[in-house]
Length: 338
Image (tube, rainbow, N blue to C red; front, side, top):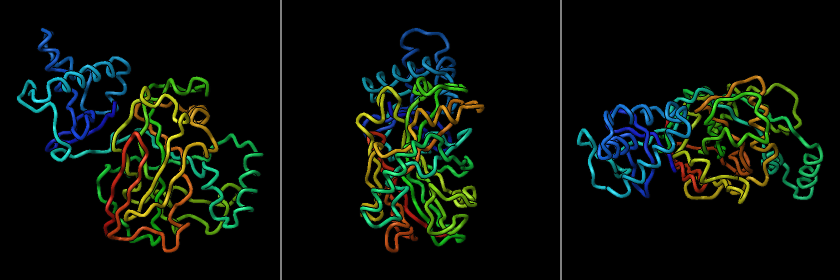
């Protein structure tokens, strides 16, 4: 399934994508239950498919099974209306897609976690490959992690504000893991059991706020102020959906591909096979003494091609930014002034 959070008027709902349409899972499930003769169908639907994505994920397999039933019902009855005469299936153009988890409990990001990104400041190809080989020889096993304030999360089509505080607004297209089951001290061998699915997060950065310039981040031991440089307003675009883990059982086989375009020009294009610290190891590390809960999000790093690698590459007002990871989809954002 491709799970979404959407708004109709001002009400937030949990839905699923069906081609270019959005299914209201709660309404579809309530109608299905009514037709099956279940008493108080709305009450049961509200319990298993609440309006909050975190609440839905907390329902575990029972909620996911209910959502699958609702999606199948809506697919078979696309013109049906719900218990309150509401539409079950709506065109995306008539609703507003939110970030699939608009207010994650925890939002972690792994820094410099791809070999190509870690070495992209090295322009000589031979020297760059030598540095990649050196990094691989170190068998790095501890991710460099920072947190973004969850309040910075915005939806998959929202404009991105270029704040006046920075002249170096950068992008990083990242695969984000959505936790689906509470746990701590999770061994990497069991890590995927705690994954609800995957979404896209753009780690928007202000390179002139908190970052020393022209350094190799993988070996630099000085003071990097991740919180400031990664914490500008609207610095966490997320979406457009959560693809459930059953549809991506192994993100490395085949390896998912991360792409970024600015005004249609390709900036980033590479796969997870270049990742340094694996997703299972990241989950193992992050859960060591920290309880991960449903709806927590971990962005796993980006590939080469960020803005500072391109001549005059930083984002400017008026440009359009697109980040794509299939089968999840594409984030599209217009850059606007503050």
